[in-house]
Image (cartoon, rainbow, N blue to C red; front, side):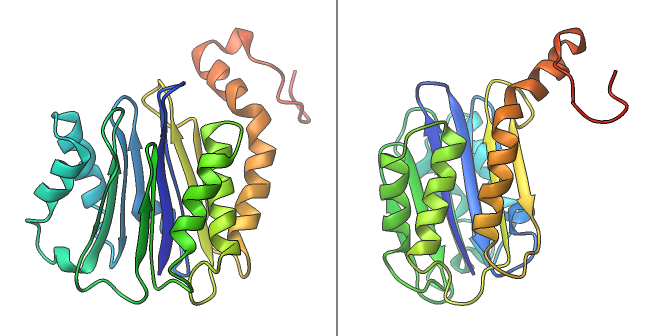
Length: 223
């Protein structure tokens, strides 16, 4: 019911994830990241607690592979599909034997992609290839991966929700965009949302640090 990507940017230290699904509000359940730690995904028949647990384990010193091995002791883990990445180790992927539909995954040096109930086994491969070849920020590269995944077939059924998450140096996300229900093509709609937000990312960080240095919002009533 889902295809997703987790990734890191060695140049900036950022971590991020993106996801799309036929289910509503997929990003609220499935993708998590933490400054200085990494990113994690829990999907398929989702247990939303597993993403934060993976991040806790990596924060305590476990590699992504060992973090996911530890989570394999959790109840009903055979129904889950998990991914995790930190700053230095290879990304890790786990797909339980009771996960649903056509299942596939792909891992590179700085990213991993996985999906279930897919239209094609090639979806994660296409996503990883797009991420690795795309220019721009981590958020932009994550979105290029999602667009490539949808172009390769995406989920077998209609996709209705999508999300994009990026953490930098702060303890709150620098990008956290979600479309919880769109009748058609939420990945493209999310990309359009990202392109509106992209030039304002640093402005919102500046407003948090020092409102005196913040640029105008450019809206009626803004002094």
